[in-house]
Length: 88
Length: 135
Length: 266
Image 1 (cartoon, rainbow over the protein chains, first blue to last red):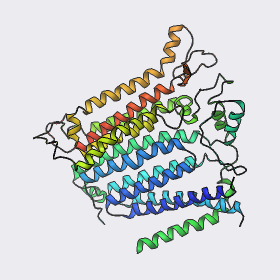
Image 2 (image 1 turned 120 degrees about the vertical axis):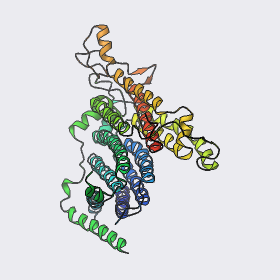
Image 3 (image 1 turned 135 degrees about the horizontal axis):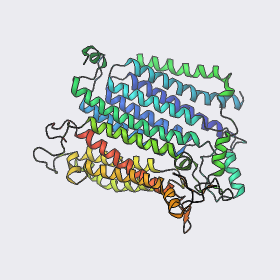
Image 4 (image 1 turned 120 degrees about the horizontal axis):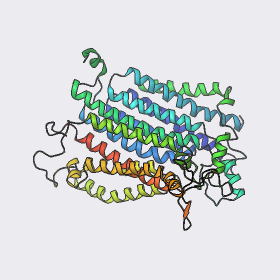
C-alpha cells in the first residue's frame, strides 16, 4: 500500500470542507434568493463527497435526493409564489 | 514535518471548517430578516450537526489500511467476522443521522407551507415589517 | 471586493485555528478501537453461531434502523406523517383541484425536448429507486433512500408538464393518501406479525420481534430457498418506500396548486 494514501484522503477531505465554507458564506450574504438556493445545493454536494470519504454510504444515498433535489425544488416553488429579492 | 503532524492538521482543518459553517449559519438565522433566508440557514445548520455526528464514528488507519463501511461483503466465517470488526466504522451514528435527515426534511416542508400562508395573510415576508404590524 | 476580503479572512482564520488546535488534538482525533456498543452490533449482525442475538442481515445500519432500534424508526415515521397532516390542514381551502377553463396539452408546460427527455428517464428513475429500496438488507440502501429517489419524479413532472396533467391522469392527492395509508398500515401490521403468530401457536412472543430470542422462540424466517430476506426487514423496507414516495407526492401537489382559485376548495 502506498504510504501517502492516508494523507491524500485527508487532503481531499480538507479541500472539500474549505470549498463548502465558501459556498455557505455566499449563500448567507447573497440577496438574490434564487442564487442563495443554488449555493445551498452546491454546499450539499460538497457534504455528500465528505460523507463518502467518511465511509457512510447509506447517508450519501439519503442525502443526495433530499438536499440536492427535493429541498431546492420546494424552496424555488416558494420563492416563485412569494418574493424574490431580500430588502436591505 | 512528519506525516503524523500533517494528518492531524488536515483532520482538524475539516473539523474547524464544519464549526465555521455552523457559526455562519447561526449568524444568518438570527440577523437576516427574510423568511426564506432563515429557512435556508436552518437546513445548513442541521446538515452541519449531522456531519459532526458522522465524524464521531470514524476510525484511524492502522498499518496503512483504510477503515471500511459497516457492510459485510463476504460469507460469515469466524475469520471474516473478526476482520470485519477490526476495520469497520461505527454504524450507530449513521442510523441516527438517517432518522435526523428525514425529520429535518419534514420540518422544512412544514415551514414552507407556513411561509406561504404568512405571505397570503401579510403580503410580505420581511420579518421586521411583520413585527411592526402586530397581527 | 468586500466579499473576497471577508472570504479570505474566514479561510485564513480556519487554517490558523487548526494549527492551534493541533496541540490539543488528542481528544478530537478518532481512536483505533470502536466503542463497546458498536463492537456488539458489528459482531452480531450476521453470526450463525450466535443464534440468540443475530439479525441475519450483513448490512449493520439497516439492522440497527429496523431491528435493534426499531421503535425509533416507528415513531419517526409517525412524526413525518404528522408533519404532512399539519401541512395539509394548513392548506385546506386555498386551492381547488378542478380546473377553471380549458386545458391544452400541446401548448402548456415547457418545450418538447424537455418533455421527451423527462418521459424517457422517468421509468429509469423509478427502477433505480425500487432497486435501492428493496435491496436494503444486503447493500447500502433501504426504504427512505428508495422512497426519496422515487419522489423526485412527481416534482419533475409537475414542473415540466403541469399539475393538472398529473390530476387528469389520475394521480390526485386522494389516491396518494390511500397509498400512503396502505404503506403505514403495512408497517403497523408487520410490526405485530410475530406477536400474532405467537398468539396463534400458543407461545410467548414480543411485539416488534424479528428473530427468535431466548424465552420467545417465535420468529420470521431468515431466508426463503437460499435468498436472504432477514425476517421483517424486507417487508419494512417495501412498505416504507411506498409510504415515503406517496407522502412526498401529496406535499408537492398541494404546494404547487396552492393559490389557484379559493372558492372551490375542499
